[in-house]
Length: 579
Ligand SMILES: *[C@@H]1O[C@H](CO)[C@@H](O)[C@H](O)[C@H]1NC(C)=O
Ligand SMILES: *[C@@H]1O[C@H](CO)[C@@H](O)[C@H](O)[C@H]1NC(C)=O
Ligand SMILES: *[C@@H]1O[C@H](CO)[C@@H](O)[C@H](O)[C@H]1NC(C)=O
Image 1: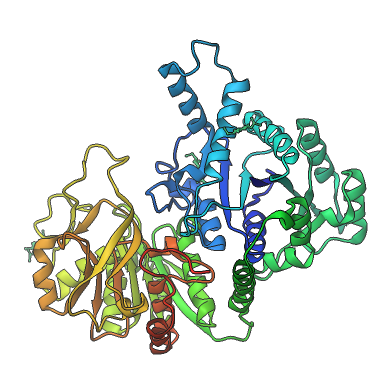
Image 2: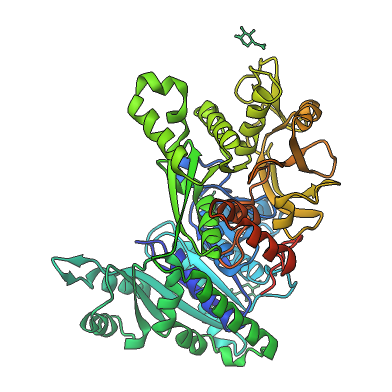
């Protein structure tokens, strides 16, 4: 068992941790990740998107925060709800065992019982296969949230100290600790005191830094590096500066340049892992592909996309959508110019309350090449989204509707194409006479938590949809597995009516009663999906519908579709990764 612990606290370590994981992958290793959050919550599903950023849905239906999404995107893996360990989960497990009598009536304590439970969980989760190969990972990245030395993370730190002790004594195991710190620039001077202090705290807790990664504004001075090295008792090459790059995708390159992989090779005794020549070659290919993918020179053509939603002032709520658009733009070699439009500003009522906002919002829609309406809940701003869907349909602007974005386009079509002027969703008006979107029959209206259709579900392309761009983008096969998170669905009673008007439901679920995707024929790109394909988008394998939206907006859809149908499709049916 090989563990890379990423500790820190002052600033998030996720960017560094996933970059380190990527470098290990390029060496041919299989990598997994665990995020430890010292909170009492048991899962992240009930946390609000405004306070907490996006809720990231995992393949097994687990709801997590954006960090696990970051690992999946960088490492091209599929994690599960167990990859997020919280204080709440650990205590719950220990208390359950105590109730069952597993501790034989002995006193149950933080040390050793909680600490052992943490160790057992890490040891178990680190061995779960995550890349579709069914093989155990070689290395597990463990990112410890919270600050070393604070009360909440105490038991986790203790468990990790014990784990380190054990693994460093086992010839087939290893433990490597990256401590992420911050070197502020004050009056032109790089301040090392916070780093010194953090390392001292860490050492007194029993952890030993194998590398100090210093977040900084510009690259670190040599003098700063040697000061940190001598005051923290580490070698010069164990101190790495991580300054802001033009894009986050360049961080792995920066870390590689500074010798991170060399340090990891030595610290994790990677020479002793036997790797087939094929895996080494795959790793090298991945690294080449990464470098090629992220290379988007500044003078590349921009592609302008409007994101019409209701949390546009908190873009973290749409993080996976934004990332999926970035991945797609890199693939098309375009510079993504994403403009956020608050859907409420597009509504008729805005004309009188704030005409400037109204005009500005519509000006954006008139100038962009593509429009995306992402998922969301609640009533606010819905009419604005419907107006955006109508605008895109009538003006042949490329449109991608995700989840709620599919539903608003269906409502729009019911109103405009089928003449049901008052049509709406049951979510917005339970007493509406014409509901084109209804509450899913198997749900419960009383209990909000746990009643959603969550996680991976099949989307089946229907007979006679060979013309569909969406299907072609997915490689032309019959079925794709994407992740879902919804409570409402298209009303099956009105489907025939819509289809008669040319609004084609190209994909349905396995019962045939639940609409999964629509596409218009006489439009360059007008597509909606009930699933959230953004959750499976990867840096080197963009999500097909997002790729389609960006490619169509950039005028290269035909080329991309050809690539997808002739070459290896980016994402195959079961989601296993190729590299
Ligand atoms: C893990 O779960 C906790 C508790 O719900 C949540 O606060 C945290 O954001 C989650 N972290 C990840 C990486 O999903
Ligand atoms: C951690 O748990 C594993 C699996 O149960 C066990 O083999 C190992 O000895 C434990 N390590 C420590 C440090 O307690
Ligand atoms: C739509 O609702 C309005 C106001 O409630 C009503 O006057 C009108 O008759 C309804 N139109 C249709 C087509 O049902």
